[in-house]
Image (cartoon, rainbow, N blue to C red; front, side, top):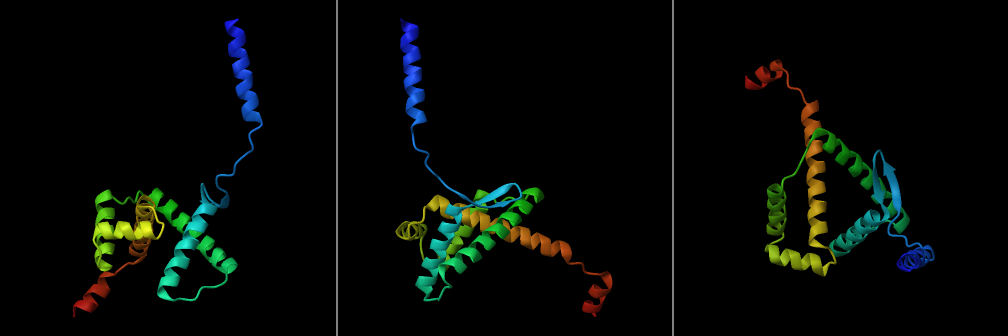
Length: 162
């Protein structure tokens, strides 16, 4: 009798889940090597760009063009982030905290005011931190690439020293 109850409960649970409608959580906008750019990433950046442009009084292209430009940027960012991962580039929490404190200072805000402003603009602080970390990683990778490609010959040093 106990086995029948367990079996019926199992069948009821399976039957219940088999009729559940699939729910789309997010869609893939682009595949970049072993990573992806999600539609939510595109939508989030598009919202941010529109907000910033509106506050600065800047004109933006039509939504289709803007979406294409944002997708291209996110693809390039994904490539650079993957390069950074291969190079072992990391941004510490202390570096990130210092950068965010500098951003707040440049905008004449305290950290509490900055958090409030982000919340007012509909931006989660954790999401903001992750975005700043990504931007710092991208900047570091680009700087490393520039440094790697610059070579100063001893003759150039001697010429400049004269």
